[in-house]
Length: 154
Image (tube, rainbow, N blue to C red; front, side, top):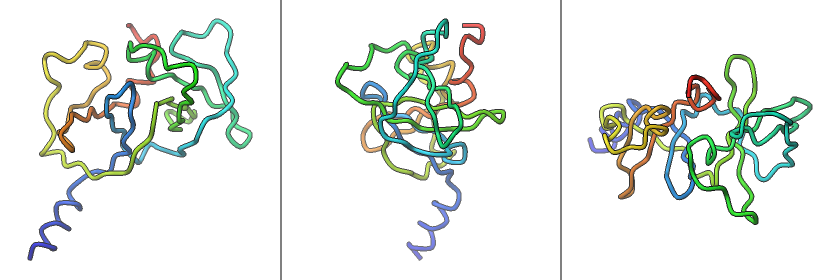
């Protein structure tokens, strides 16, 4: 009976890829993730917004790299730290979201999520779909479309 209940709970959950940005745990829906890459060569793009780290080449396709630290108003990544790339597709274009680390794919149930806390920074509140308490810490579920809306009225 217990196994059936556990299987039912997992079936009711959506899968999220966990990642870390400046020690903050985040999650993105696994269905939008196309690839996860280790450190990549990123070419700067002149006159791009500060959140755009540049572009990278993924099997012949140009991918815009968005630095999540800059996008979320966090301190710059240490010079010796190499970001991981989470490649997502939005409106037919590929984007790489640069995170400090990538974790695992986990099931998160909607009925266990909470609204954004009122103390959450406005920049984070703008891109967050809600929060989950996981392993004793707060996991912020990111709205990938909003994260990638660079300069969208901010």
